[in-house]
Length: 179
Image 1 (tube, helix red, strand yellow):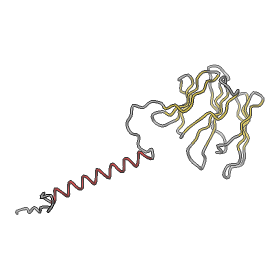
Image 2: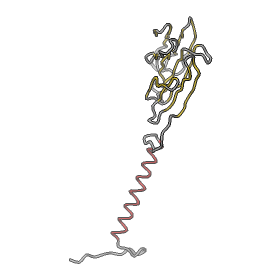
Image 3: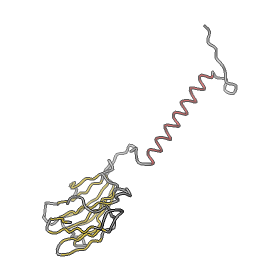
Image 4: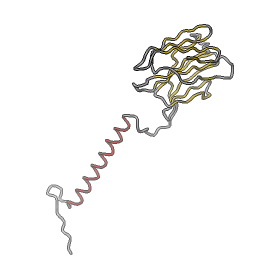
């Protein structure tokens, strides 16, 4: 049986070959669009050597505190280069400290989820015992607008109502967090 080839009028090439080339171009274009779309929303990490991205740096009573985004996009809190805490959140920052200077020994850290349902949670980093930095458990009512007051060698943190969560008042003193 003889096979018949049809020629395209403008390219003078067999139609099956033009169709195959067109399909590959479409597939490559579609793949490129998909990859660019994924990269733009952060779902695809493009290859790079990967170093920590500095978010904040503070001098404390125990040394330099760094808040960084690691190459895997987690947030790391380091004291003098030593990893203290790693969280899978959008960002973190020191919301308040006691005393409010370069010798801070109590730091209120805000962890930002990037969401609107519960945009922030908090933890206190206690540096009052030399060589033994400690974090409290996460706390708060999801509000990202707490009022912080230094009182009796500790912190009072008041959260306004947020969505359906009522206002909350937390106290940290002597290594203890209470609600």
